[in-house]
Length: 180
Image (cartoon, rainbow, N blue to C red; front, side, top):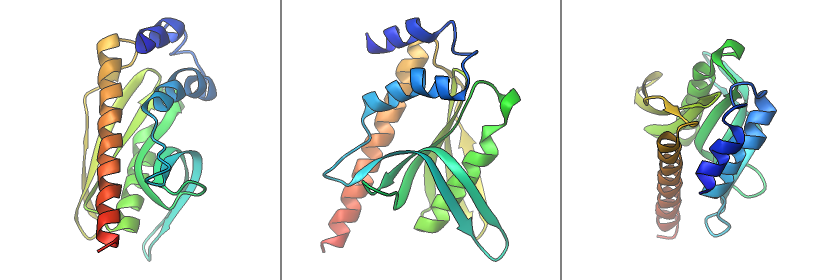
């Protein structure tokens, strides 16, 4: 019922919403329903988070639209990103920014892969970035999920729940390793 109501309330405007309207009226209610925050695991979602990654070859600086990260007061270890709450790609291509964030997180955390997503208007794409070798990566982008269609919105919600459970399992594994 929640997802159907969300579509009914927003479908006619979703492609016309500005970035903040899209975020507040459509995306944040979905993210709040998933409930990424866990006091027990000390993780939560952050919005508009500055992030930087510096190497001898380059500097990546930017502001992350949404990240699930370790830390309740400040972000300490990012696990999942969503980039660009844009109404269309005419207002900017979100993929390069998302990839920069994913690469930064993989390098900062010494991971082999990380997941993220980007949103343009009602369209969601999920991404997986895999580190192959030093400064070599490959990424995969999912099919388009049109959030104005109930079956696609259900899939988006399920994907977000899957990511949340994956993050909780990663944190649990890290906590177990830390206590040994």
